[in-house]
Length: 262
Image 1: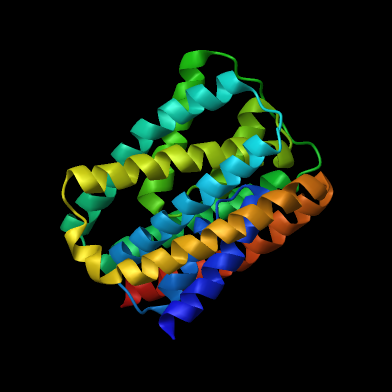
Image 2: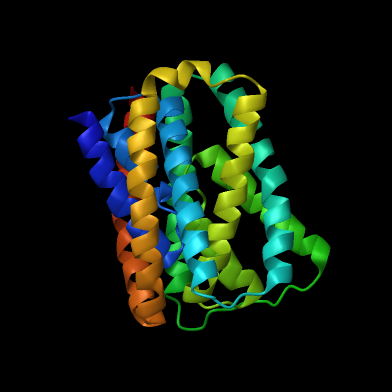
């Protein structure tokens, strides 16, 4: 029953995630924490695997559809996100070793909520200020910071990615979705590689059946979401983006309270 519930949540999350470039993890992580069937590290691992699989299918779909994008920005941001993913994973491991898991869950929820509130306000502002970063070093640093937050929070980084891509590169929300998926792919890949190198898969072996199902439905969701991204207007995508994030913010507030009071 838990696997079925997780599958439905992950499918919906990854479909929406691929549409607006939020990766799905920002929905998956809080939702699975809310259900409370697994610890924060197990939920993070399931979310990472699902989002990684979604990013693969979504990236392939964009390539086959010949979606236009700036290759220089994709390469530099992705390069930075690899190292950011490694650093973020190390910070997460340190936090688990140093603090109670409920505290870690609460801190993650607070950070996610704060980012979501900023994102909702920024995206819906009438006079959105944005920049056009061209310096290669700054582009790499952008990828590093986004990859770090993605790995530490276990959400894929979606709404954080898309918003900062709009802010720093003057993309539309629809355009930023393509670049966000690339960041998600490399940051999650580096996180999984780090877990493998450090031989940390052992605690998650018993959850592999759930992980495999999660990855399968996330791939399907990523394909469907990528198709819808091509068809929907930027205005509709912005509305979907805002509504989803408001719901996620409410869940995160509850998770933060329950984490700190547990």
